[in-house]
Image (cartoon, rainbow, N blue to C red; front, side):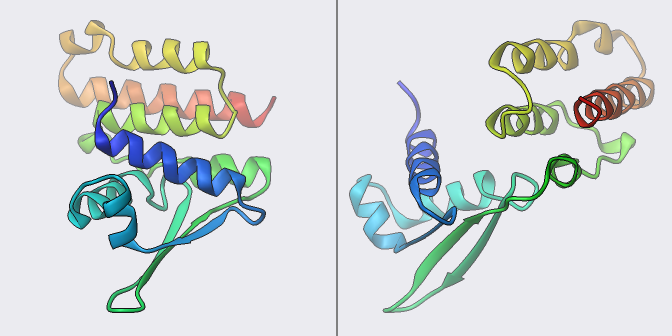
Length: 154
């Protein structure tokens, strides 16, 4: 069974995808009550799964009439790929960031489920463990750039 964070994420994404303008407005406390969790759990989901890098813009207003507005960014194909591109510093390359980025490419239907699975396995390959970290990060960054070029040239 998935975690409460994953359930909240999927619920919010379903609401966004079913909205006419890819935008929803929710109340944090009502959502927390719906999922029987604390509001900080909602904050965690919003701050980790609905970021600009993942294609979402969040606006919040706290207080009695407060709300959270989540907007899914929608751009043209090439611009969308470019907006997905994380600004990786090769010295700070983290595999989890790549996996999150690949998930986003799949979610945006640039990659099939199989392609995303293959890419995640490629970037998690033990071959990278045998290389010095800087060299490993350089190769991963280069591979990612090549994948993005291939996607935008389809």
